[in-house]
Amino acid sequence: MARFLIAIVVIAGLAGCEPRGSIVIDPAAAAVGDVETIFVGTTRGADIETGEEFGKARSQNIRYVRLDVSVPPDRELGEIKWPKLGRTPDPRTQFLAVDKEIYPEAVDFRADLARDLTKEARGAREAVVYVHGFNNNFAEGAYRLAQLSHDLGTKGVSVHYSWPSRAHPLAYAYDRDSALFARDGLEDLLRQVEAAGAERMLLVAHSMGAALTMETLRQLAIEKNRSLINKISGVVLISPDIDVDVFRAQATRIGNLPQPFIIFTSKRDHALALSARLTGQHDRLGNVTDIEEVADLKITVLDTTAFSTGAGHFNAGNSPALLLMLGRLSEIDTAFTGDPTGRPGLLPGAVLTLQNATQIILSPVTAISGGTL
Image 1 (tube, one colour):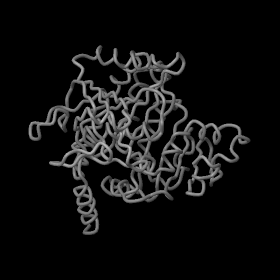
Image 2 (cartoon, rainbow, N blue to C red):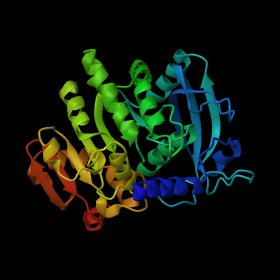
Image 3 (cartoon, rainbow, N blue to C red):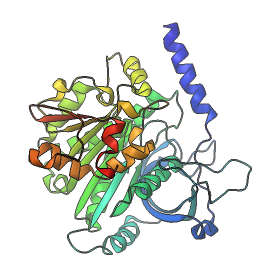
Image 4 (cartoon, rainbow, N blue to C red):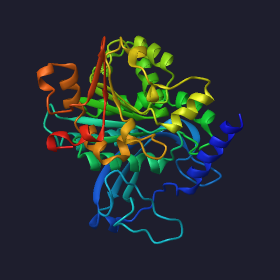
């Protein structure tokens, strides 16, 4: 018990040492960094204590925002630095907002989203929808998507769902309830993206956001909304904070999972190890040690243990090699779940196929094979 309490204090202390993300608007940053446009749907309400427009409060009404984010040139791949309180922001090293627009109505959001989607030819109009995880504020989730979009060079429109996390390392129970509260909001956002003309949607979710995403897909299946589910061109769960039995139940209700369906895991994910102890479980989906538990599901599990640093809870977003790998998810899934002749030279690592599931145990050697990673 004492060691458990010490672990909580240590994690809280480490989190407290890091500056938190904030939206600082500096139009001049557009001339310095690369600008990524992020469309946001949020069920965050205003925070009376801090004055934040989109804080920890839960709002029944989803609001829509557009952020133009400047990604600084002087940074390592996967790195995000925030402006420091009381200091002049540095657009060469820090993420800054060039512009921010809060849409009065959903129709205005759809119009701008449709404008960006139609920049692509028919058949290539895709949206990447990112759902943040536990202990994130509004700025952190949006800037994370900007970082991923920039570092991966993703095509399509970037859309972020910002649900009302308290953004505090000791607010795990509050965030779990907020994730359940936020299911309807995510469904509404997906409907808006579809109505704007997206032909395909790739869902990317981190940590507790993965649980929210699975619950929303389950909800769509119960509603028999296969037309919307069929628009989902793939699902990527990064360090999913989901009980394995719950995940199996969700997947069963969803039915045919969108493909590719990829799960990034790590046996050295200290945040999920703590989550497992908090919930009285041996492990979570994101640090599962044996794919036999999910072998009947058509999924690809990428074990990133060899790349873990720090808490090991976002290897796919922080590791330069894994960021490059994430950009090749469709290619990886095709190679390992399709014709075996397409595998050589792509990821010649340790591969385990059990029933319908495939596990790839990645290593730094694997990551640089073929000269592209």
